[in-house]
Length: 122
Image (tube, rainbow, N blue to C red; front, side):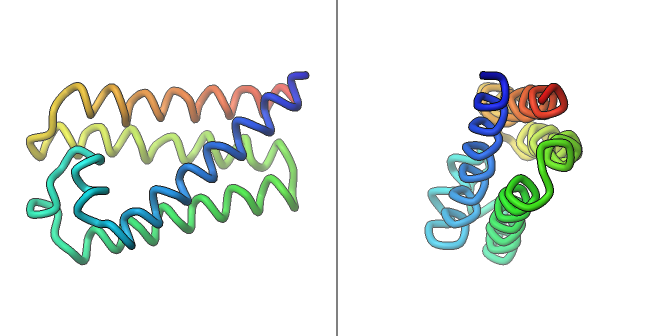
């Protein structure tokens, strides 16, 4: 049961990050608004970079899980949790709301850390 939950959460998180990357590539203004910093403040090239970054992280996470295993994915999730923590600070420093910073980005970091813990336990 724990394995199923751990793997399922990891897959969902990786697919979600892949989705976010695609959204920043194909609907950058809407994605930036959802991120918490308006597109005008972020700039077009930066939105593309974020899209590519998130897409690559999602694919890398899925590849690690599929071809290397739970322990490698757990270490990956542990390191990747730094990104939404950084996003929390970015939103706060650029005029975003605390609700978005903590309700989306910080909460995401917590879920990613839970995923890492579950994967380490498998």
